[in-house]
Amino acid sequence: MDNFYDEVAKKFGGYDLVDDEPDHTAEYPSGDPDEIFKEKIRELADSNFTALDIGCGDGTFSFNIADRFAKIVGLDSSKELLRIAKQRATELRSDSLEFVFGDAEKTPFGDESFDIIFNRRGPSFYDEYARLLKQGGHYVEIGIGEKDAMELKQAFGRGQNYGAWDESRLEQDKSEFDSAGVKAILARDYFYSESYASEGEFERFLKRVPIFEDFDPVNDRQCLDRYFVKHRDGSRVKLNRHRVVYVVQK
Image 1 (cartoon, rainbow, N blue to C red):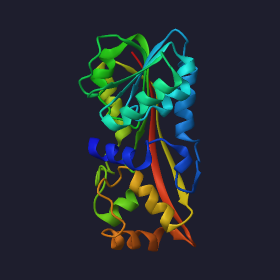
Image 2: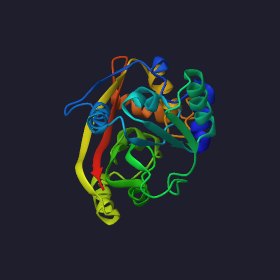
Image 3: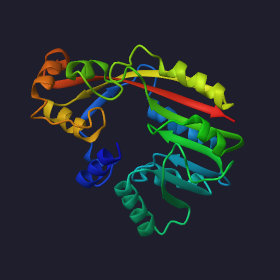
Image 4: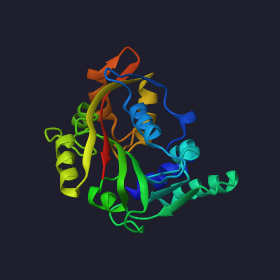
């Protein structure tokens, strides 16, 4: 996984750069989960709080909300993405942002170090995050649901969490919250669809995300064609997505 994100950073100059996103639209029957995630963080933010950004990547999200907190610490296991984040912080002369290399399962921080922790599709180690939270603090996450891109993975016969679509991530995580001694205030599934402008734009998308870390448009041509037959509408390609959003309090 680390190698994948390092390679993406080297190819595209980061992971969250919106100006190079593949051309696509999306339909959200129950609301945009990314926007709901951001709104929950804005609601909980305080200018006196110290926050932890799990899986911060190139720091884009931390930079965008830095003015809402006293300090944000970004944690990631990709050295290349952290290099980009640190370079940006230096260029902006920001003293409220710190970026740290480390393992989210065993972080280098002390007990009750943070008022709030947020996690955008990063690793989920709830016992560790509960340890890091101050009493009364909040953990906010947007994660990948078990049915995300299911039809695409079936066409390829592999992929991120392949074959796990009958096991509800939401229910599993709620059980883990109980075990970690934290309370779920919000725990919800969000299903939506994306529509890519062309096969080429869809392939460009797949190169940037870890659905298939070994994706190759040449070697995977038959898999792509198998998917396109069922999920192409004219020139556009549809992809079904699944996210979970959590707000948890210690």
